[in-house]
Length: 167
Ligand code: ZN
Image 1 (tube, helix red, strand yellow):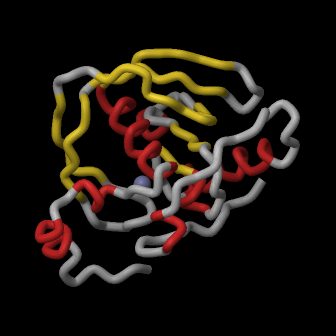
Image 2 (tube, rainbow, N blue to C red):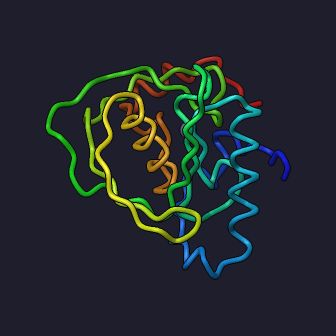
């Protein structure tokens, strides 16, 4: 297990859609990568990390929204799909490990139903709300080549990037 180097905005990999994961039960390369993604996320320290943020151009992200407050809830999401999103939305300033120190206000549905596969190939379907729903949508954006800044209008993005320099 090891900590992987992070990819920082405006690296082109963060703007590229990812390819679906094939069966993780037979893809022997993927499980060590997921373990490294957890290590990298905890070391950063963050609560979510998507493949492209470490140069893995596959539809996979890891998340643990509770470890900073005590007991952890590590989850790996492979080929996640949002199958229902609630109509009500809220706005929150989101940080991103690939855009350090830049908080971007993003409007998102407040609750979602997600279907995904875990790292052993099991399928799951569950409702999420609150911070977890937001984190999942943020990470899924990465799998589609989108970052927080892509939610802003061009003038708002230009303004927020004033003085920003990538690490
Ligand atoms: Zn991010």
